[in-house]
Amino acid sequence: MGDNRRCLCSHGISGYVTVRASSSSAHFQNNVRSIALTEFIELFFANRYRRIRGLAVTDINAAEWCEKKMEYTLLCGKPEKTKAMKAGSSRHEALKEEVIKKVKVRVDSAEDVWALKFFNFIVGANPLLFDGLTRELPLFC
Image (cartoon, rainbow, N blue to C red; front, side, top):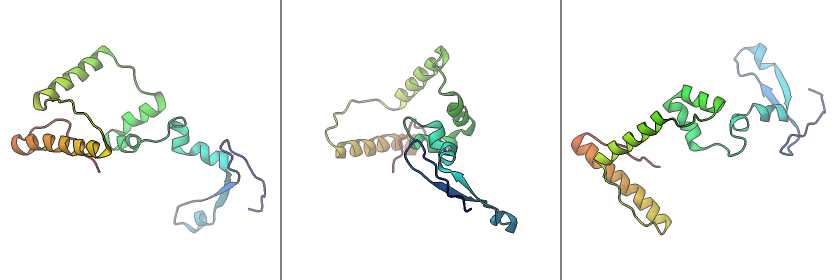
């Protein structure tokens, strides 16, 4: 631990990060090592997969939907859309239009954006409550 070497990562941050094993064993609790900050940054998820655009909320909750799909997307990128995928998307859109009719609305302010989100929720929730059927119910926080 008396090592005074410094490193400079690509972001201009220098130094070392102390890593302690998280096991409850006394052997592992005493096993402390320092890794170069560059190594730590390279191991970081966002730096590894989202170096250009950063993390999005979708990146975080996509793993809840389908972990394997998220893994393949991160490792291989998004697949190119095939004819079958385009046909499925258009069918999905047609099914959605059977339940909810789209109407264009002009949005002028941030309040209008939130009002529209709230209104879309109400429009989607009504058929769910009364008919037991809805598609694409928007949820927001």
